[in-house]
Length: 154
Ligand SMILES: Cc1cc2nc3c(=O)[nH]c(=O)nc-3n(C[C@H](O)[C@H](O)[C@H](O)COP(=O)(O)O)c2cc1C
Image 1 (cartoon, rainbow, N blue to C red):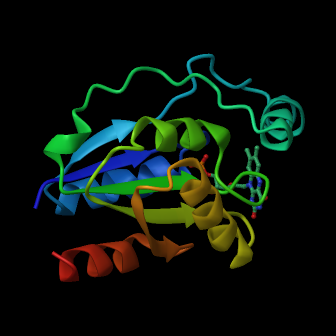
Image 2 (cartoon, rainbow, N blue to C red):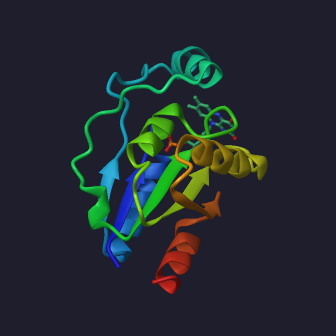
């Protein structure tokens, strides 16, 4: 099974998880990045840029991703929760893969552990790309739990 991990990470938590998974799982990795990076200043990023994007449902341009999605059987999509759902660059990515025929398994992490965050993310992903087969993966789990889940699922 050919697997692509696509992830968004600003402060490195999601990247660290993906790096650990990449060591154990035979897969390619693509990073989702806003074409114009968010401010390095947390407050400006969170309370000005990201908040405005989330509130106004702005789909920011993302940097080109060098992957042919239809070469893959599944995409593992990783991101942190921003303002109770996915960060808007992930919405742009979802639009980009709206014709992907395989399964997209969704993994999220956040500071607090509110299960509504995952539900919101799944709802929003399905709204942006209704043809895509999104399935819920793990929410706020450790690297070990991710590896058990993904290797067992091979
Ligand atoms: C713009 C922004 C919004 C966030 N919103 C939430 C939130 O609604 N709930 C929450 O529990 N954590 C929230 N967080 C915290 C992140 O989800 C958490 O720190 C995550 O692990 C960061 O992942 P990263 O290091 O891969 O960027 C937010 C962080 C940022 C920067």
